[in-house]
Length: 236
Ligand SMILES: Nc1ncnc2c1ncn2[C@@H]1O[C@H](COP(=O)(O)OP(=O)(O)OP(=O)(O)O)[C@@H](O)[C@H]1O
Image 1 (cartoon, helix red, strand yellow):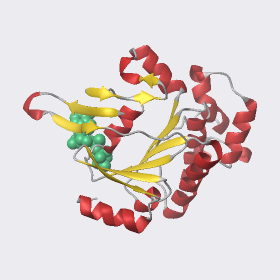
Image 2: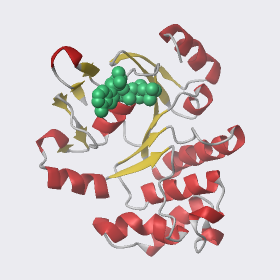
Image 3: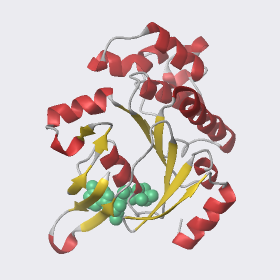
């Protein structure tokens, strides 16, 4: 994205959530976004993913310039070219695990490729739970279903907003290890917003936001160095 700004509201009450952010994510890499509360992380993710339109600036996904797309085309991009993972798993309770994973395809993103489905299901370790309902699964398992659902369309990028926010430390590590292995084994591009230095350490790179602006980056981040940098950025 290039010179992206996002202003909510207008007049004296307007809030500048992003202020001229330029960044590019290399394909096949795992990037974490950190910053104090209100620094613009979620807004950044939503603009990068085409869930929200910036007030100014340009966002490109692969070769596609998102700002020039009509609403219908943008919906199509969201459906078939990006995957999402949220803190709340957002699974459909009445559907089985298999149906939840295939949901983007059922909603029109394309036909199921049985080989890819099998690969994704095996990667997230759910082959023996395909006929279960989400309520029969643990939180970590439910998040793994959500990750499989995000991968099923072979998206250009997966966007994750606090994907381990609702999980205990051990389960969180498993889910983060899964995201890491997905990046390594399928060259998937992942962008993850997190507050947690340990979660960020699974990424190749951490970018920091403060007051809607980029405030530095760390390559091959260790939890201790990330924590130290966050302390210097202010509150958590
Ligand atoms: N829909 C909205 N309408 C008005 N202001 C908004 C809206 N969404 C976000 N903001 C404001 O934009 C700024 C950035 O919000 P954002 O949610 O991107 O920050 P964040 O870094 O993700 O915060 P947190 O870590 O607390 O989730 C904040 O000041 C927030 O109040």
